[in-house]
Length: 154
Image (cartoon, rainbow, N blue to C red; front, side, top):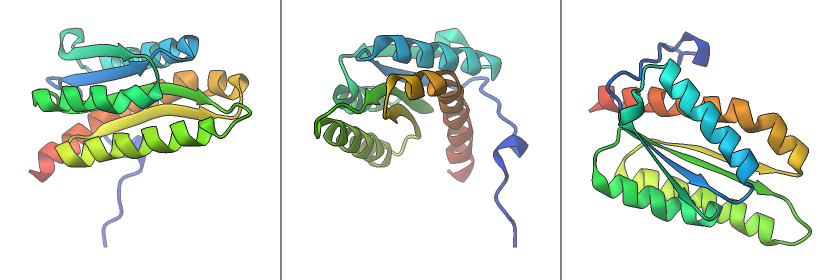
């Protein structure tokens, strides 16, 4: 029986891949840091800057419809969702977190395109800041790995 590769064993090559990024502007300091880390990692993996389309939307609930718009172009190997939802004192946090996550997954399945979901859901600003760089890098690695995996499965 073969075991799945551990993340560190996977060779990631982004050369020739086209990636679409949708960034929510709500909590913009965090999402800007996510986007910078993601783009820097994509570049390190060999994705050309000209092969990255980066759009922004007001908040996490708008991310899925923009992802859908990019997916409909049929020109990307993978997409990335960037956002930050910080728990407040109301039920709104759960609604936004659950709906945005479910809709991102639905777009990925409906269009058969990998989407790296780096919409942070945290209890407070400190947790978001602590995660912003690593999650941005992780999103880039997931996008490249899944783009290559799907290409090999077809």
